[in-house]
Length: 304
Image 1 (cartoon, rainbow, N blue to C red):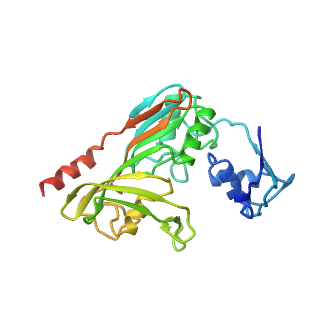
Image 2: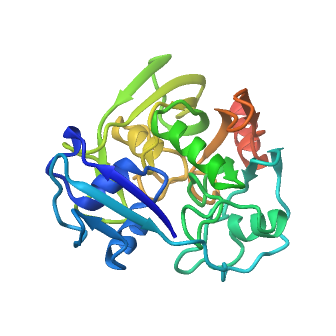
């Protein structure tokens, strides 16, 4: 079991302890932190606490991270479209319909199942037994690049880059309507939708979220865009484009429009991924080609 010690900084004064730990250890998911607190693996000034307890500046936090246990998720021989691989990281082009990591209702056929078969025991364990190697994710029906970390050192390095927004993440998307501006910046805070917990929304007091949008091509009733993430909030591109009246084509969660095309979820693709390599310190950039369905849509729209 690993031990981590922190002193609560001024900027985290009077916040919930689970939020505080999340800010201090950004590589851990909030649900995993809450489980650590419940299992009495987080001490505040030497005492166990509840997830809703508040911290104060200069409080002493101790976090015990249990050693990785034997993973009960089974490796599966799932073909992987590998964009980059070395001893520290793996970048995979995820197909549409594949869940990144096991969760309720999806315990097989996930990217993690395939990565476990491909990598064996060479995966970071920081995010728990259900998410070995996973440092970030994309939605089930979003295609494109996902980084997998093969050890904890690589995981911590990539997580730090994600936290300070230095990872270059460029997406391609098709949205409803014709965007008039050639370029725009959507800077709107995102938080949980108060009426539907499955959805995110632009909300006052939400986490800062910034998306840079560039129009690549305009069609009759649709726009093909490049989206560069300055931050990485849940459903960020989907929420931001919907908030300006241009929801993603095929997005059943955030769009009120009916798609004239037979699609499986939103037209969103993680096209480019750039990061500083955890070991060499060199910049690594991968490109995931547009999936066949996406390119077919573009060709169809060009003919109309």
